[in-house]
Length: 268
Ligand SMILES: [Zn+2]
Image 1: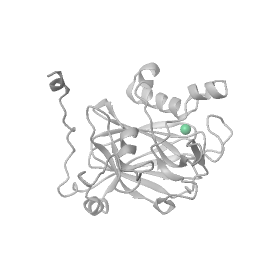
Image 2: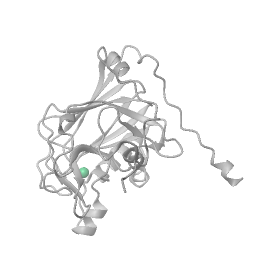
Image 3: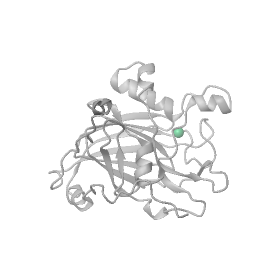
Image 4: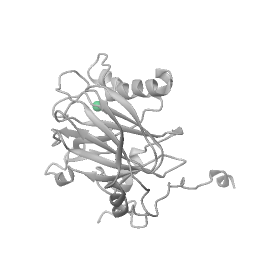
């Protein structure tokens, strides 16, 4: 039997990439954040602005979290973004928020690694299939306490940004988009794999913020993720996040509404 696409996206409202591109040309940089190697930082992007994640100094992958800046209970839903767009995201794909919202938080507008496509192992870049490296899995598989997994880095960054306790911030850290990481599933056993990222200094991934965003980005301790993560063994580099403000909003663009559903009607 032929497979059937679970979620055909032809009916989705498509982003106006030409409209985004038209206002991006005259946009001015309003802020930048350096993400130190093996650590994370938060950054804010108003709706209608662009943000760009750039590799600097050396090949490095980043673990990206997104929250609604006004209400961080609305956050990126990697599973549904994957179900809608596929295992790896590129230009025109959206980062969707979870229930009860399910709206685009950001749209990818530029990707210098678009040329990589899908390699002979089924690997590609910018995945939404991994989770984030974390100290619990590391302890489970290898034993020991490691404090610079992306999960811990993002927890500390969110706590620093918001004033929350670490335990409170931890509950808001979620499955990531693995920016620049090269991953896939092995064909024979279906296991998650990683391989050396093709990212080089100067490569970037750029997004249009559809709503007011609080972002968190961790420069993964795996470096280019060619060998291992959750240790200090890999060579790691910082990442750069820049925010750009267009002179005018894209023509016809407005902040997406939450995607309505009233579950109280289900009680009959
Ligand atoms: Zn990581």
